[in-house]
Length: 190
Image (tube, rainbow, N blue to C red; front, top):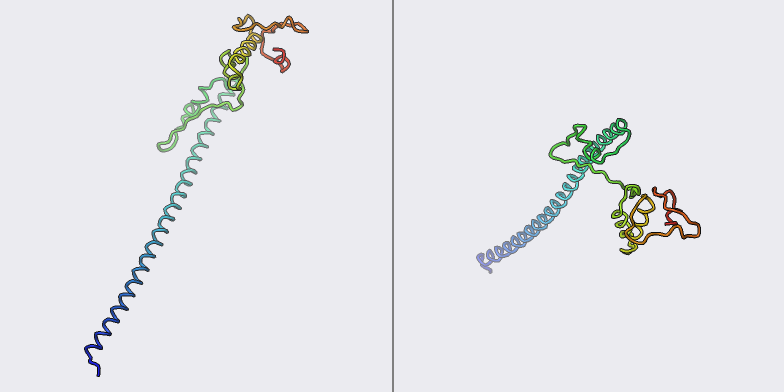
């Protein structure tokens, strides 16, 4: 007949084994839940950052459009009063003329950029033309000669620094007119 003491010991060991395995399962469940919660928190923080940036972008866009509208209104006034816009400084300080101040600690900077890429030939000098031709990857000597020839064509009494063009010796002789170019044919003649 088995003794009751031995029987109790076997039951206690089985209960300890079962409670130990339950404890391991609970710990694993807590570990997975912790990892899932951390991943969720990271995703939520990223989503909040994206939303915060979108809100900031909308606010900055409103501020930029406000500054643009004030600038355009002031430039329209300048244009009507002064018969056109002639000063780059007026464009860049136009928001100040209207008394516009941006909200909070923001700063609005207005710059004028001519995106047409046109150079005013009547106002261009030898350095501007030479740099333009260099930018077009024309070699140094040819760029200087071409700029010098253009200046001689456009300005009466220009003193050539390189070769003097001999327009009088062409098939149909002509003189440099001393005025800005009027056509591409004139450019071809130079």
